[in-house]
Image (cartoon, rainbow, N blue to C red; front, side):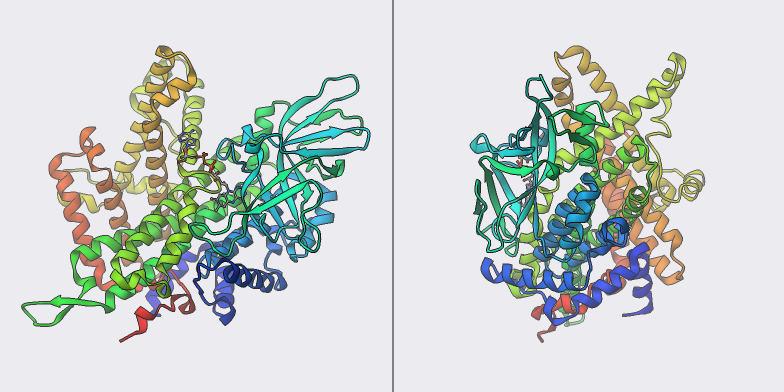
Length: 640
Ligand SMILES: Cc1cc2nc3c(=O)[nH]c(=O)nc-3n(C[C@H](O)[C@H](O)[C@H](O)COP(=O)(O)OP(=O)(O)OC[C@H]3O[C@@H](n4cnc5c(N)ncnc54)[C@H](O)[C@@H]3O)c2cc1C
């Protein structure tokens, strides 16, 4: 690897570079060599062996607080699981379910008694678990799940039931075979003395589901989903409960509790707020899934670019030589903007992990900070996973027939990442969460002004509250202040101009969404109808916001880079990212008169120009991703 590529790796690795290096070393062991097989028996056996190897090395400890038996480094925990995606996404998912979701639910929703009983055993894999939230009837709408946990004061137990067929827990990772215990989300029903039984909304309980031999416990019925669209190493399954009794202590009671006599109490009065507070503590899973999809995209792009630099097709009539396919402009246009977006996403993801680690290590987190973190995690999860689907498919096509051979990894990566757009929150649903967060901030900003202030505000800007920068704020302001905005082609390569274009798009979209919502709210019967009326607009808000965040993170990363050649490459790559984003939304920019048709054509010319500038650095760019050589063991890259 050249020193420039190493500097790019340093820029991409971010704060938890040491963890990334440690995992790279782990993955370079023969036991973690990529091994694609659709055979679920072989794949599950292999992944379980790998998981045990990782557990023996205590890799999960950083994910848990020292008081619980961990080492308290959530950023390291997320980074570790994310890096496993470079080897095998089934392994990443199994680790994510065991330590991130199952462990995360116990750590964040439980109290000392749960931490003492479960955390060490689950770190060491003595207690394999699963995270049972989704049901056949309800996936995205978790608040409507039907499983019940009814308190029985005579025995001081909860009785867990699946009252209908659609209440069956569905798709649950680990439920088919390995999990002995489940973190079960259920509607909690209880009655204090002299009260009628009342539902208090969704809560989480620890429920044993299998004995040591793997047999379902009485009242529990599990089944296996078998063959899926990918992730053959993950044993996804269903769980139904019929009168399953667990001690009262199994309620994860950090936010709400039930007294022996059945009296319900909670530190959070409002049931809606309680539900979202509980779910908010589980944000780590979403952060990990986004990062892992990004890592998988990096592997695929590394393979495709390397292949593109070796593969030759057709003769150059001038030289008589066969052309390396990476020399075709179309090939550059297919792959290099995706490489640029991978960089942008990684930089934004690094900022997110830093922010998450900071917030999760503090006790004084206010609601706005938490809400912003959740919005950012949702947005980057959607952006990373959609990017992975697109990039891996393009990488596959860019390798022609060879790309379709399982031994060359791409079809496995594609099949395995497909569902990342759905689990840990469906991307469309998450995008709406991002937009709602922005509109709430906007409404807060509007509410805090008097009438004249509001008119001025509405006429000028969306306000600092919404356009909050996370990265290198003063530096970005300088770029904006010193930009030369004109119709000249060169100004499209001006960073200030690029930032301004993405900021203007976001501001305009938020402002007009708010205006349309207000108008629709007056005109239509319900808030639901009003929101649904502008839903396409809302999704565009989320996309514009996340792309602006990515660009700013990219700019901040360039600023931090200390190696001049690496910095120069990053500058060009950032141009490519910005122009690609603008080109993809060219119709909107023209329709709303943010750019002329002439300038839109210049964007395309700019894209081609940057592809040409970056072509000589294609190998360095993908080497910068730092994918271990052992993960790139694709015969098409080594065959003559
Ligand atoms: C392989 C796999 C592993 C999984 N592992 C687990 C696990 O371990 N534990 C667990 O609890 N769950 C797990 N899940 C469940 C997963 O989290 C859900 O599938 C996911 O939340 C989506 O729910 P759903 O499948 O019911 O889809 P739905 O919510 O029914 O969505 C279907 C479609 O409707 C659209 N849609 C839904 N609501 C709206 C709306 N308001 N506006 C516009 N469009 C909308 C969505 O975009 C989507 O395209 C897993 C799923 C899979 C496939």
